[in-house]
Length: 463
Ligand SMILES: Nc1ncnc2c1ncn2[C@@H]1O[C@H](COP(=O)(O)OP(=O)(O)OP(=O)(O)O)[C@@H](O)[C@H]1O
Ligand SMILES: [Mg+2]
Image (cartoon, rainbow, N blue to C red; front, side, top):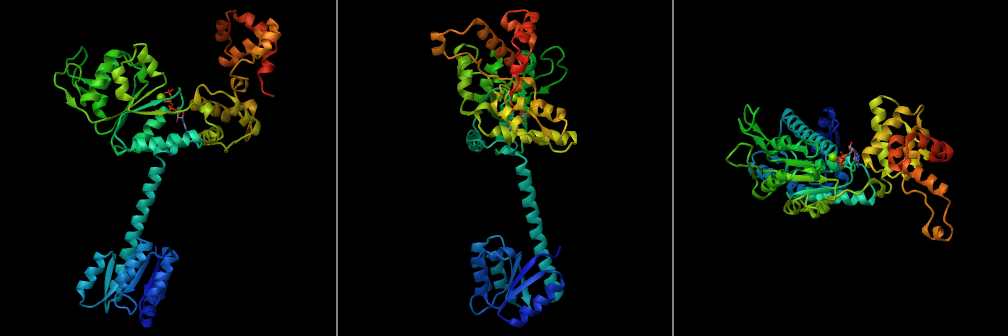
């Protein structure tokens, strides 16, 4: 534990030598100098940062030890100082402490006392450093570090999240399915002043209306058959923290009214209750539907929409974030290789090309699933295009229909159109033949025949 580095500054050479020998015996790395100026030069060059502790004499010709300390601390505020004062000068000892010294030593001193004081000082510093490191590690695993990506779109998103997190306003997260809305909601919570309070989420689309209502607001004993005792709702359970309303677009109207009240009055009434109870929550809502058109269609209350849409955060679809796919793919390969206990696999250039060209309508969740499968299926250390599902390797996207100009001058034969359209539908459904046949309005056996006739299986593969 004694690998600490100490600098001794005392105008008396003999004192420097004595301290150096004593402290070296203790196992410290010690340097000394008789000039306070020398210490300032070191500080100005940033070299004092190599030292854990400076022990300086109070009375020196160039400047006092306290003046030296103040100058050095200007460059390096967290360095520890011990000031050596003359016996009996309690006032200057107190002055040194007030001005930032960690300890003082009175001369003449007892060797054991000095050793003890120095050890105490260094141990304290070590604890502080360790705490700082732990806090750093903790904050790294939280917040935005789990949100992989460095495309300009993601950098911008992260910036917005950081700004939004510092406020207490309601946030509305929009983005396609699987784009990371929940991840962003958690990051906002973890970066907010409410981070050490609960984060509770409810998927409004997953529960039937009555259950959703009792889950959110809680109930009083006897509110309905089966309500044997009072139950606190999830909104109240999140008191002090953040509440995440997931898939908000599907919330029934009756619950929308009640949510509006929570937002406006900051209180709620449990089912079967008569008196409202106060709630202190920050609300984050997420939706993958276009809420504004839901408002226009009369399915979503306009007043609630405007209350929720105070700070909008939009997550762009994966296909629009250039450069994020390789990072995310690598991240998931590492994750699933670890999970399987296998060696970390590598993504071949060709496989990466396939990933980059796919449309990813299921966004990051879809990529995550594809990479899990690929890690499982690949037979060696490399993930090749063959290890990716057919759907991903297909052309995907728009049907390769001729351009309209070309079309006017010489319309393509029906068979060309048919072939292109069937391939398009197959790619869209992930080669689900029953589904494709239904969309195409033909029966499955006809579809199988057409797949054979046009050799679509071979054409779906990326060369
Ligand atoms: N940028 C990202 N970095 C790492 N993992 C991500 C990222 N975005 C999403 N994921 C992962 O993808 C999956 C889907 O993310 P999430 O559940 O947050 O999406 P969502 O937008 O809430 O989807 P849905 O609309 O279907 O509810 C999760 O496993 C999540 O951890
Ligand atoms: Mg979600």
